[in-house]
Every structure is written in structure tokens, then in C-alpha cells.
Image (cartoon, rainbow, N blue to C red; front, side, top):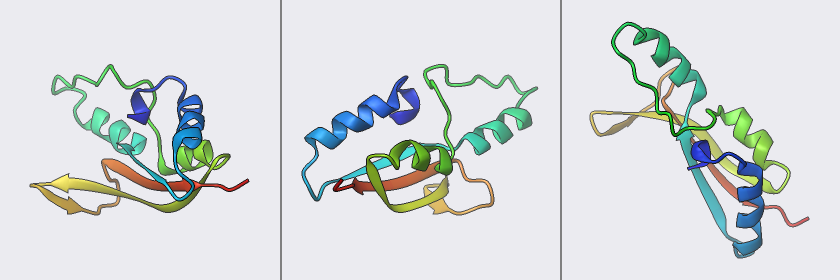
Amino acid sequence: VIAHVYKPNILLKKFKKILKKDGIIIIISPNKYFKFFYFFINLFNKYIPDETISKHYSINDIVKLASKNWRVLEKFSYSVNEKKIDYKIINSRIFLILGKNER
């Protein structure tokens, strides 16, 4: 849901307070580069954007946002085609697993 949150840094700080010492957070979000590409492909095909998304992120955007309070344990991007996970040059989703920093 991070793409739908207006102040994600506050949300991540709250998660850090309530998460156990060895807990993790998994973030799955639309990839901003895919959305940009998809928008232009469908510009003349009655494309309707998701108006509930406050901000689109790249993997680097979320890593930068989370790195103050979290350790990145895993990160990658992927797409889903015909109910199968697919890895392309430009993927539709980003996936991160974050662990608590013990600072």
C-alpha cells in the first residue's frame, strides 16, 4: 500500500516501533518506470490511471526512503503474465524485503 500513502516515512517509522526485533516488512508496489511506459503505450486507448496512488516508486526510491530505518534484505522487480511470474527489462512491480536496523 505504500504507493497509496501520502507520508510513507511516517508509516515506516510506526512499523519499526511495532515490529519485533527479527521482524521483516515486505513491500510490493507498482514500478514507476513501467507505469510511465504503459501510459504512453495506451495514451490513445482510453487509458484510465489509478487515481488512488499518491506516488509511484522505483526500487531505488523505496530503498532511499527506507534506508534510514531499515536494512534491505532483498529487492527485485517482476511482472505477472498469465498467472506466472515473469522477469523483463521493464517490470510492472517492485518487491522489497526490509529488516530492522539495530541502531
